Amino acid sequence: MKYAKNILETIGNTPLVKVNKLTSTLPCVVLAKYETFNPGNSVKDRMALQMIEDAEVSGILKSGGTIVEATSGNTGMGLALAAIVKGYKLVCIISDKQSKEKIDILKAMGSEVHVCPTDVAPSDPRSYYSTAKRLAKEIPNAWYVNQYDNPSNAKAHYLSTGPEIWEQTGGQITHFVVGVGTGGTISGVGKFLKEKNPDIKIWGVDTYGSVFKKYYETGVFDENEIYPYITEGIGEDILPKNVDFKIIDGFTKVTDKDAAIYTQRLAKEEAMFVGNSAGAAIKGVLQLKEHFKKDDVVVVLFHDHGSRYVGKMYNDDWMREKGFLD
Ligand code: PMP
Image (cartoon, rainbow, N blue to C red; front, top):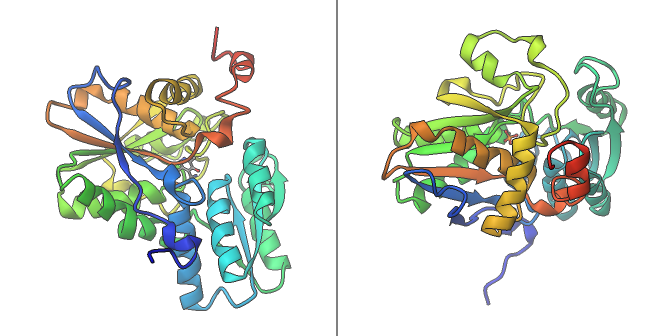
């Protein structure tokens, strides 16, 4: 018999799938690292498990303890899988711009969920960062995961996602393009790939309303870059420790409208029912066209599943309301 001992053993080893129609104007091949095949339907299962296992080893997460995290939903789902299998309680703090589906999924997985306002400064006591820190202090035997600054986040991608991409492309990858939120994915995968071949280019996809691109290009943390945006999962109003700017070769910014339209196009033209940051990532690849030549192998990572966006980017009424469809 061949079976996984529990659901956590099915994390990782996701397929690499060629994108065909949407990238037909590019000279190179574009392969999607298709992370929805993880049991929690997102890449975040990998880092959630790594963060929990490292916290167990270091002793900060104790038997029967409570895991507290500020999460846009996917990390919460990954933490929920590990918490259930390993017997921990989970409290998730989520911002009010996240889709209802993400909140409902966390509740379905037994997590306590606190919803916080998006449009307040990170230092505001109502922000989701501050609320997470406060709850972690108030709840006995609690551990605040802090995916933004927790090194086990990028480590998970250095140990699993990066090596998988290197092996699946037979070492032929020339570019890696990925949306950046906490920075764990780009930094872990990027570090591994650059160690294998320093010529591989690592590109981050950012969103308008986020600080990354300007900070990367000028070294200035410009608060004028920060304003509310619709795209989910990528962009930040802080500089997480997990973003390793040294291994990044550049950022491209994608508009909310393009990210939403390309999310729909991935489903309708490639049969890839993926999340909003995948739409941003594939549009980012198209924007970088001038950097690619024939024989290049571009890998783009699709973080999560389309089911989490059926009330938003996959709903034409919502799309019209936002002015994204005529
Ligand atoms: N896309 C989605 C849907 C996400 O949930 C996240 C995590 N915030 C990202 C992209 C960005 O990944 P990372 O945090 O590793 O930079």
